[in-house]
Image 1 (cartoon, rainbow, N blue to C red):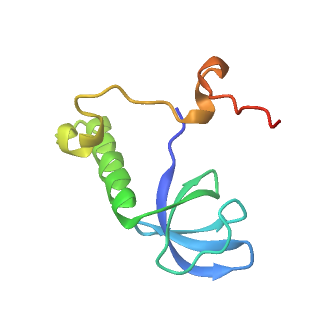
Image 2: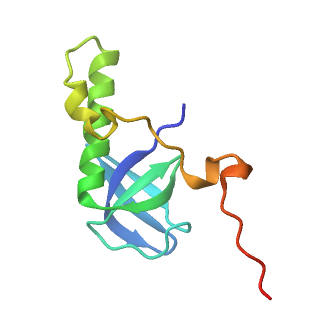
Image 3: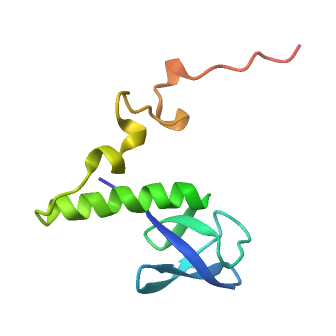
Length: 110
């Protein structure tokens, strides 16, 4: 399973940003998301920013990751709170992962 890590931009450079996750600061490639400013939240994976996140989305992701870490260490975690967006519904695949027959096909131009 691939897990992205929310990180907050601390300092900006050309094509990269120094980002913080907890006490760790890493250089993150920002070429996929474009220009960012200090304070911006990024979803990162393998040293690259994959998307710009709202502070609320970053908070939710960090809470879920914290709950996963607690469970893996045998500590109690409030999974219902950490994964509230998944309670009572089936998770949905993003459009680019849906089978081709489920993608809407644009009408050809006349």
